[in-house]
Length: 131
Length: 448
Image (cartoon, rainbow over all chains, first blue to last red; front, side):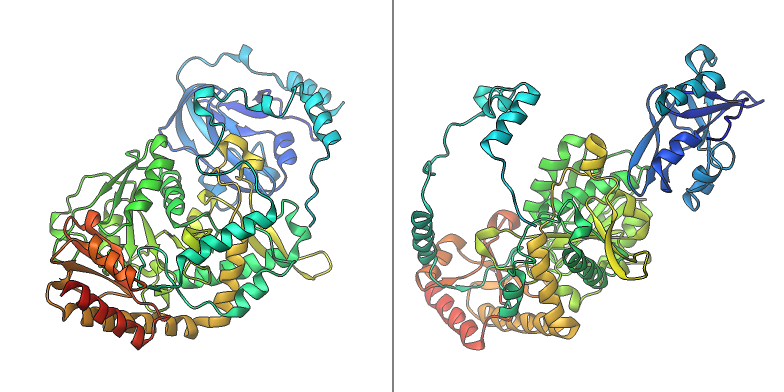
């Protein structure tokens, strides 16, 4: 397993969050999630300006063997979606923390980091899953 | 693949594992007032000999009348080879197996079917079939909502010529999911949509166009498709597969083509059989494929380069996606699809076109003959395919009853739909000129 980027926050649903300088939050799924799904063939994205609630469905990632929901880790409004995934969904497999980002959200409240996981905590979760 | 039933021991072990006393106990959550302990007129049990006897007697009661009824299901000649091949042991199942790739022959049939149906409808992809034409409309409407997310109204507008039974079924299935079905205004002269009365701003998520229409007319599908797309609506075409050998396929309607086409597959080699089993077909443009319910079979090569067939779209089916599946359909109509595939293979494009032309010619002969009788005229003007609505000067029921006494099923009573005494008649290629002339003179006799 590759090392987790240290500048991101994580969730138990295997999503990552990056807090951008402009106050928005970029969200994707982790390398672990992408590898478990297998080669992605389709990503169903939300609409820009759509409001999302923490814990609600936000996107759907579909591989040859399964379609899975991506849940919003925070509440807010979608300010951007990664349109490139329409033609190139496997970017999520190849660069989950970079070109494979999924959405960018303007949080409606201050992001409560205590609800999210640090890289160390998430690594611990992955280690437990491996056992 | 063999069907292996559970033994009594299997059943007891499974019940013990889930902590249930009996199979009956699994149904406890259904309230008592919704349960019935017997079906009226259906006996508890009959053995095979008794059932065979009963069915033979019932079948004999039907006789072998001359049938001029269409209205959604059509009598066509079915070459003997169709059901001879379809009922071979290798094909004789209603199901796509869940371990699908072990049944390469079944998958190849479905693949060939998809190829032929997409060619007929002029669209990119076909699923492996649905229950029937009516439920296919419900699935197409739900699919439009998923793929046309910009429109939130849930309002589906139906051309005036959409089969009212399809509307009822679609409303029953999709109504509880927030969809409403409304009719576009009709031009009483043509039976088709009244373009002058179409207003903007209705915000429809989809517009449904049936061609040929339920009362047999031909809609200006190009103009209506363009109007619908100008309203940002998805376009669903309901089509008769036989007619597509002659008429423009839905994929070519208007400037962009309909996005989804559905219909009743029964005319393709499936007998009338008192209303079923039939099958529904569904095709769509590539861009809607993720929202299409059911399965798609694809052709591929294995590691050694050998040709093979595999399920390429099933990730959104309920055995994988559970409650979030695109649809709750449980199976396709595999056996009917097998028959349709063999039927289409045997006829080919020219054969199907010949069936279509002959049906049109026969219906023309019938309509011309009937309209020469006093008190009979066409209800709507304009061209038609193989079915025509006639206005009568008297109630239709008694006329049909008297014709039935002469072993003629004289058509479908269209009075409720038309709001006037009206009869829908159809003469497919199965009717000879003598049959048609016999009907015309019988009709003249009972209305004299």
